[in-house]
Length: 244
Image (cartoon, rainbow, N blue to C red):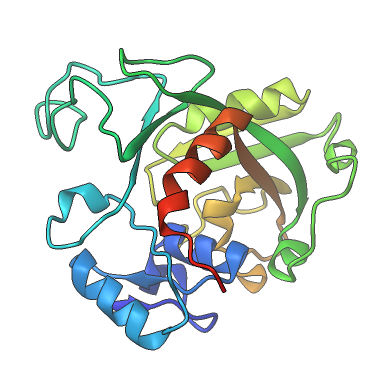
């Protein structure tokens, strides 16, 4: 297992764990054994009293008090578990009392009652500014790319969603879809490419000195659940709240 630090690269930690660390500053530990990773994180950060685990439901040695089941617009697909289908475990007939269902889609995509949310593009900023921790401009920064051709590279599970969002901003993009977690070494675009736009998930694999003369822009995406989700989450957390 590995504790994520600023000195590590995405090749060491994985792109998503490093992005979570850079965006939040929260301690992050990566490990195939989630229970052992949780123990290591708590040992290194004794003040931590909340753990969030990715794919935690499949690790039965890791105790969990609550769970959020997330679906996108594909729902349960064919309803089968891996490798025959998209599910990691069978779809329940009802939502357990300690669980919430969140749809990364404008509408529910299974029969389970839950909450919806929307992805949105917050804005764009240069790669070096992103690594320096700057925020996107108040106006989103899109005017810097209007009317100019730009190559959009995305190492995502469904890169077409990113491309559609960029096109909706009025950008003239040439899409370059890549495999999820693509390493970006060597650079996947042709030599001499003038401008490229990537997501933050891919930006963590692109130190500014690695891109040469290409102007790389980083698009910040956000996910906003409906307000009722936060209320339901607070209710689930209430029994565990301690009085200072």
